[in-house]
Length: 178
Image 1 (cartoon, helix red, strand yellow):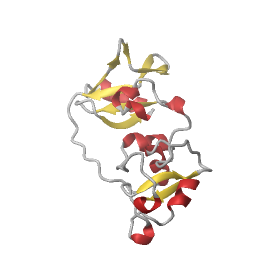
Image 2 (image 1 turned 90 degrees about the horizontal axis):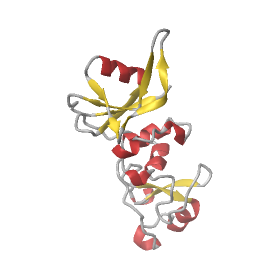
Image 3 (image 1 turned 60 degrees about the vertical axis):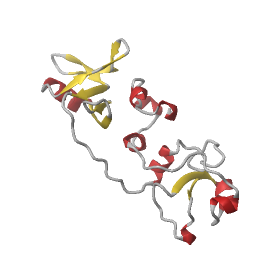
Image 4 (image 1 turned 90 degrees about the vertical axis):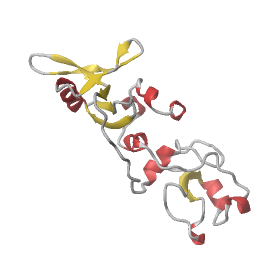
Protein backbone atom coordinates (compact mmCIF):
# COMPACT_ATOMS: atom_id res chain seq x y z
CA UNK A 1 0.00 0.00 0.00
CA UNK A 2 1.26 3.48 -0.86
CA UNK A 3 1.77 6.05 1.84
CA UNK A 4 1.01 9.75 1.89
CA UNK A 5 3.15 12.58 3.14
CA UNK A 6 1.11 14.58 5.65
CA UNK A 7 2.02 18.26 5.76
CA UNK A 8 1.03 20.71 8.44
CA UNK A 9 -0.94 23.80 7.39
CA UNK A 10 2.39 25.70 7.22
CA UNK A 11 3.67 23.14 4.64
CA UNK A 12 6.15 21.46 6.99
CA UNK A 13 6.22 17.63 6.98
CA UNK A 14 4.36 16.05 9.91
CA UNK A 15 4.43 12.35 9.21
CA UNK A 16 3.70 9.60 6.73
CA UNK A 17 0.25 8.00 6.83
CA UNK A 18 -1.58 5.38 4.81
CA UNK A 19 -3.37 6.48 1.66
CA UNK A 20 -6.67 5.35 3.21
CA UNK A 21 -6.09 7.64 6.20
CA UNK A 22 -5.22 10.48 3.81
CA UNK A 23 -8.47 9.99 1.89
CA UNK A 24 -10.42 9.99 5.17
CA UNK A 25 -8.85 13.32 6.18
CA UNK A 26 -9.71 14.79 2.78
CA UNK A 27 -13.33 13.52 2.86
CA UNK A 28 -13.81 14.87 6.40
CA UNK A 29 -12.63 18.32 5.25
CA UNK A 30 -9.59 18.30 7.51
CA UNK A 31 -6.96 18.14 4.73
CA UNK A 32 -6.54 18.92 1.07
CA UNK A 33 -4.80 17.15 -1.78
CA UNK A 34 -2.03 19.42 -2.97
CA UNK A 35 -0.58 20.10 -6.37
CA UNK A 36 3.12 20.18 -7.12
CA UNK A 37 3.66 22.03 -10.35
CA UNK A 38 0.64 21.57 -12.62
CA UNK A 39 -0.46 18.16 -11.31
CA UNK A 40 -1.97 16.85 -8.12
CA UNK A 41 0.43 14.82 -6.00
CA UNK A 42 -0.97 11.30 -6.41
CA UNK A 43 0.39 7.80 -6.87
CA UNK A 44 -0.03 6.23 -10.33
CA UNK A 45 -2.14 3.37 -8.91
CA UNK A 46 -5.34 4.42 -7.19
CA UNK A 47 -7.49 2.87 -4.51
CA UNK A 48 -10.45 0.88 -5.77
CA UNK A 49 -13.68 -0.07 -4.06
CA UNK A 50 -16.34 -2.27 -5.73
CA UNK A 51 -18.07 0.84 -7.08
CA UNK A 52 -15.46 3.62 -7.30
CA UNK A 53 -11.78 4.29 -8.06
CA UNK A 54 -10.02 7.03 -6.09
CA UNK A 55 -6.69 8.68 -6.78
CA UNK A 56 -4.25 7.57 -4.10
CA UNK A 57 -2.91 10.77 -2.47
CA UNK A 58 0.86 11.08 -2.28
CA UNK A 59 0.88 14.47 -0.52
CA UNK A 60 -1.83 16.17 1.53
CA UNK A 61 -1.89 19.27 3.74
CA UNK A 62 -3.83 19.81 6.95
CA UNK A 63 -6.18 22.81 6.79
CA UNK A 64 -5.61 23.64 10.47
CA UNK A 65 -2.23 23.76 12.13
CA UNK A 66 -1.35 20.75 14.26
CA UNK A 67 0.94 21.72 17.15
CA UNK A 68 3.79 19.26 16.90
CA UNK A 69 6.83 18.94 19.06
CA UNK A 70 9.46 16.44 18.04
CA UNK A 71 11.03 14.74 21.05
CA UNK A 72 14.56 13.54 20.51
CA UNK A 73 14.05 9.90 19.51
CA UNK A 74 16.08 7.04 20.89
CA UNK A 75 19.29 6.27 19.04
CA UNK A 76 19.09 3.71 16.22
CA UNK A 77 22.05 2.98 13.99
CA UNK A 78 20.03 2.46 10.80
CA UNK A 79 18.48 5.93 11.25
CA UNK A 80 21.97 7.37 11.82
CA UNK A 81 23.11 5.83 8.52
CA UNK A 82 20.08 7.34 6.75
CA UNK A 83 20.79 10.72 8.32
CA UNK A 84 24.38 10.58 7.04
CA UNK A 85 23.20 9.42 3.59
CA UNK A 86 25.20 6.18 3.86
CA UNK A 87 28.45 8.13 3.36
CA UNK A 88 31.57 8.21 5.50
CA UNK A 89 31.47 11.55 7.30
CA UNK A 90 35.26 11.82 7.09
CA UNK A 91 36.21 10.80 3.53
CA UNK A 92 32.80 10.91 1.83
CA UNK A 93 32.82 7.47 0.21
CA UNK A 94 29.54 5.60 -0.32
CA UNK A 95 28.95 2.81 2.18
CA UNK A 96 26.78 -0.30 2.49
CA UNK A 97 25.88 -2.59 5.39
CA UNK A 98 29.19 -4.49 5.09
CA UNK A 99 31.42 -1.41 5.09
CA UNK A 100 29.67 1.05 7.40
CA UNK A 101 30.57 1.60 11.07
CA UNK A 102 29.62 4.11 13.74
CA UNK A 103 32.28 6.48 15.00
CA UNK A 104 31.97 8.45 18.23
CA UNK A 105 33.27 11.99 17.54
CA UNK A 106 34.22 12.26 21.21
CA UNK A 107 35.43 8.69 21.89
CA UNK A 108 33.58 6.59 24.44
CA UNK A 109 36.89 6.11 26.24
CA UNK A 110 36.93 9.90 26.83
CA UNK A 111 33.36 10.12 28.04
CA UNK A 112 31.60 10.47 24.68
CA UNK A 113 28.02 9.28 24.60
CA UNK A 114 26.20 7.22 21.99
CA UNK A 115 23.93 10.03 20.81
CA UNK A 116 22.77 11.73 17.62
CA UNK A 117 25.16 14.64 18.12
CA UNK A 118 28.22 12.54 18.93
CA UNK A 119 27.97 9.69 16.41
CA UNK A 120 28.55 9.62 12.66
CA UNK A 121 28.66 7.03 9.89
CA UNK A 122 32.22 6.08 9.05
CA UNK A 123 34.06 3.68 6.79
CA UNK A 124 36.18 1.07 8.54
CA UNK A 125 39.44 2.70 7.38
CA UNK A 126 38.60 6.16 8.78
CA UNK A 127 37.22 4.66 11.99
CA UNK A 128 40.49 2.74 12.46
CA UNK A 129 42.59 5.85 11.69
CA UNK A 130 40.65 7.88 14.27
CA UNK A 131 40.54 5.13 16.87
CA UNK A 132 40.00 6.57 20.34
CA UNK A 133 41.65 9.88 19.52
CA UNK A 134 40.02 13.29 19.15
CA UNK A 135 39.48 14.81 15.71
CA UNK A 136 42.46 17.12 16.11
CA UNK A 137 44.70 14.27 17.29
CA UNK A 138 43.70 12.03 14.38
CA UNK A 139 43.92 14.74 11.72
CA UNK A 140 40.43 13.88 10.42
CA UNK A 141 37.74 16.48 9.73
CA UNK A 142 33.98 15.98 9.66
CA UNK A 143 32.21 16.72 6.37
CA UNK A 144 29.19 17.95 8.38
CA UNK A 145 28.39 18.23 12.05
CA UNK A 146 26.09 15.51 13.43
CA UNK A 147 22.49 16.59 14.12
CA UNK A 148 19.25 15.08 15.36
CA UNK A 149 17.42 13.09 12.66
CA UNK A 150 14.13 14.19 11.13
CA UNK A 151 11.03 12.22 10.16
CA UNK A 152 12.45 11.37 6.73
CA UNK A 153 15.36 9.45 8.25
CA UNK A 154 12.95 7.22 10.17
CA UNK A 155 10.71 6.73 7.15
CA UNK A 156 13.51 5.30 5.06
CA UNK A 157 14.16 2.63 7.66
CA UNK A 158 10.90 0.97 6.59
CA UNK A 159 11.43 1.29 2.85
CA UNK A 160 12.32 -1.63 0.64
CA UNK A 161 13.68 0.56 -2.15
CA UNK A 162 13.78 4.13 -3.46
CA UNK A 163 10.67 3.53 -5.59
CA UNK A 164 8.64 3.93 -2.38
CA UNK A 165 9.70 7.59 -2.32
CA UNK A 166 7.28 9.78 -4.33
CA UNK A 167 8.80 12.16 -6.87
CA UNK A 168 6.99 15.19 -5.35
CA UNK A 169 8.33 14.80 -1.83
CA UNK A 170 11.74 16.33 -2.58
CA UNK A 171 9.98 19.72 -2.55
CA UNK A 172 9.27 19.37 1.17
CA UNK A 173 12.63 17.99 2.27
CA UNK A 174 16.24 19.02 1.88
CA UNK A 175 16.66 18.31 -1.86
CA UNK A 176 20.40 17.58 -1.72
CA UNK A 177 19.62 14.61 0.53
CA UNK A 178 18.18 12.70 -2.46
